[in-house]
Amino acid sequence: AKESGRKAIVLASPELKNEVENLIRKENELRSAFANGQLEMFYQPRVDLITGKISGAEALMRWRDPIKGIIPPKDFIPLAEEIGLIRSMTEWALSEVCKQQKKWSDSGIDIVPISVNLVAEQFQDDQIIKTLKTSLDESRLPAKFLEVELTESAAMQDPKKTAQLLNQIRDLGILIAIDDFGTGYSSLAYLEKFPIDILKIDISFVQGVTKDLHSIAITSAIIAMAKELKFLIVAEGVEIEGQREFLSSHHCEEGQGYLFSQPVPADTFKQLLINKVSY
Ligand code: C2E
Ligand code: CA
Ligand code: CA
Ligand code: CA
Figure 1 (cartoon, helix red, strand yellow):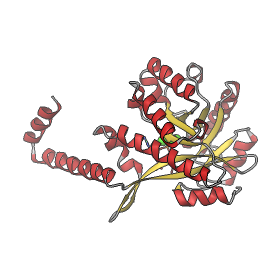
Figure 2: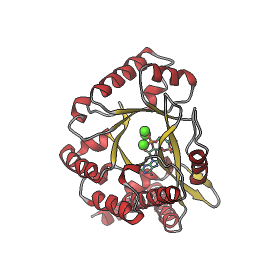
Figure 3: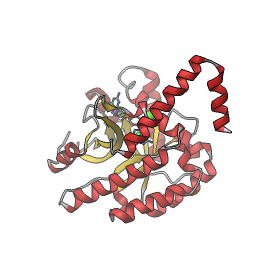
Figure 4: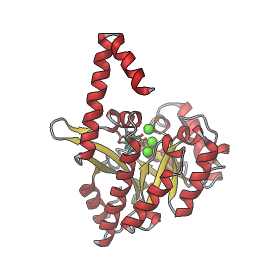
């Protein structure tokens, strides 16, 4: 049905034909980039706001094109979701992160938990469980060094199925983070039904805490409620000292953002761990 739909569009007008051709070209480019090993994981540290030490990291995907350089995820993740490539890409990301972690650990480095972003589609069936098991088994990485992130809207698409899968993920020993918190529709009360360990407060609130009362009110309310529910709280997008001060004075445990470090290539992140940097 999809094929015939496409043909009908192509016949409709030259402009649309162009658009469809562009999309198909980009699709082919992404598929071959993936097949040729041009995708790469970057790592952004998460920092303990009391000690200043690196307490974890988020793995973020980059497309390293030989001509265009580094392409950010916003320019290819949505496409990957559309063309059904995101599952394979996530499988690759998970196995890459686990292997990387094991290698660092085997060479004597004190590793920290690293999270991988999952998408809504992966909470519709059981495939993700097998994928996670395989990554852990093949790398022989202890599960506590792997975390997954999903947004509230991904979790809310099929809350019952999501709860079931999240319980299985927790049984594997993998920690679960809710991403972009505050931007979706769910309430904290609802999230309590999921086995969540970490709440990541969306960048938009964090960046407002030195500027507007609205962000201050929302951010302090999120922190207070998350504490009640015993979630570990991570603030995303910490860029300036004033934001860090607000967050630590409100007892937010961890922060992630340019104030500490941008997402960096694996070798750079490894050096941060070796040097035991403190922010
Ligand atoms: P996200 O999961 O919310 O990731 C955080 C984004 O905020 C990252 O953008 C990061 O570079 C950016 N960021 C971190 N600190 C700061 C800061 O202080 N200021 C500002 N302005 N931004 C900051 P990035 O790497 O471009 O990724 C964008 C989005 O793409 C991610 O948002 C995530 O939704 C998606 N993404 C990235 N990698 C993956 C992946 O491997 N799999 C999936 N499914 N999605 C991914
Ligand atoms: Ca994320
Ligand atoms: Ca986020
Ligand atoms: Ca986001």
